[in-house]
Amino acid sequence: METGGFALQNYNVSSSHQRKILMAAKDAFTEILNHTKTITNGKIVIADYGCSEGKNSMEFLFFTLKKFRENSSQSVFIIHNDLPENDWVKAYKTLLESQESYIKIPDVYFSAIGRSFYSQILPNNSLHIGFSSASIHWLSQPLCAPDHAFPSSSDDLGFLETASNIAHNDLVTFLRHRHQELVDSGRLLLQFGDRNAKDTVLTMILQAACENLYNKGIITDEEKRKITIPMYRRSNEEIIRALDEVSGLFRVVSIDRIRTEWNTSDSEEEWKESVNQVKKFIGNLMRIPMSKAINRSGENFEAIFLEFSKEVDSLAESACAEYCIATYHSIVLEKIK
Image (cartoon, rainbow, N blue to C red; front, side, top):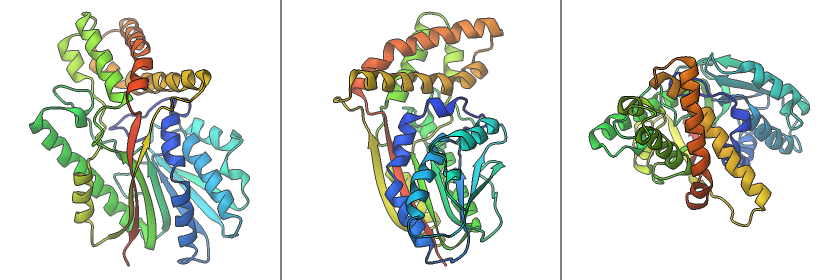
């Protein structure tokens, strides 16, 4: 997962809400696959940008390609992409061992590229389909807000302008590289965080936990301000601004918003599992940023991180009941001939 210079760990076991977001796009992706039959009779090349440890995208491809196989025998070649420091061993094991892996589908092949997707990673005019889910809201560089761990949740207007410009340039850079890689009429499916919903489970718990550590004297004010997640959730206006800049390169096929909420009718067991998923994801998300911000010895840092985990545990259930877990933009673009 592209995360401003570090790779998320244990993503497979802590990304259930990201999986829901991606699975909500199954019909859109099936339509893209069917569209691709109109532009090639040969092998279909698919790129998965920001695959992390692979569970979500591999299962998503299993369901969509299985349906595609009902009316097409075309070969499919899938390229998984993430940073070099991604856990590629876990990604390959997931692919080879999962009961819902697309390698069980005939005539489907795969490879991987460890390189930032803010660069061109494939030859010109070689790609039919690209998709990226829960990845391109991660910035290409660390960015520390003066008042919040999440740059797009800052109340500092001057900082927000700077962050917005960086996020804009990242998105435009991403799209220009994908335009080079795609064949004419090739399509992209992009899903990334929505800034119109400011308060989410993630931002609320994470920021409150950090504030509590500071109020208890466990971390200093400087350490609290240095804790940053280089993620920027874009507003509708920011997306339109970026798409306008590349309007000569892509046609907008669709723009949707996907919202996942806690279902109050879930069983108690399902509810507890949902809350545990949030706890796991925040723990996995925060370990590296906190270790960079808090300059303590290994043993002292682990004690601080344990206190942080306790704060997350105490906040998670009430926060999950009150806040939407995530709102995402879901966009399909087509390369203009």
